Amino acid sequence: MYLRMESIIRRGEVGVGFLWDSPVYFDELDLNGTLHNSRFAVHVERAQSALFEQLGKRWTAYADRDPDLHYVVRELHVEFLAAFAAPGLLPVEITAEHIGTTSARYGFRCGHYATGYRVIVKIDRETGEPAPWSDWYRKAFVELHRAQG
Image 1: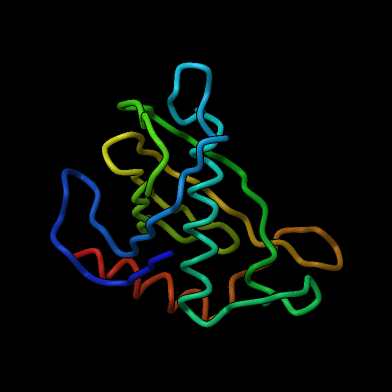
Image 2 (image 1 turned 180 degrees about the horizontal axis):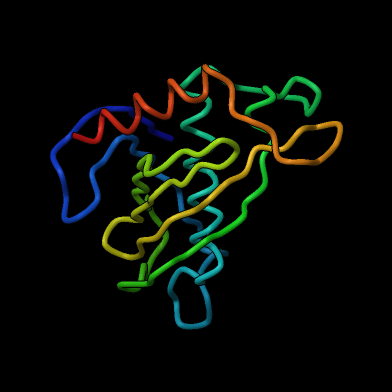
């Protein structure tokens, strides 16, 4: 697998801050031989996880997880643009769009196959209630946003 964080030129309406090549396997294809629509969310999640790992927030046990990585997905919007019709690498681009007190909105583009956004909400591990992002997370979000151009 290959990952890279870089600032590159704008493509269409979405600036790029983090790129992840996500492997698509044969068993993810539907009866028509294309990537099943539900699998795009999985590849976006993998790219988001790779971004956090790139930023030094790797974890192997739930108890070791950084408090900022305790979040739930509040909203997911996907617009399908073209069929991904074979196993291979799906390029996933993650952009930082907006950060609130407890939520963050990330845009994504899966090559020329799908585009959308995802909103996550940080939660307190003990109470399950929304919790504010740390200074580290806010700084990382702003840096990703700035890298988009």
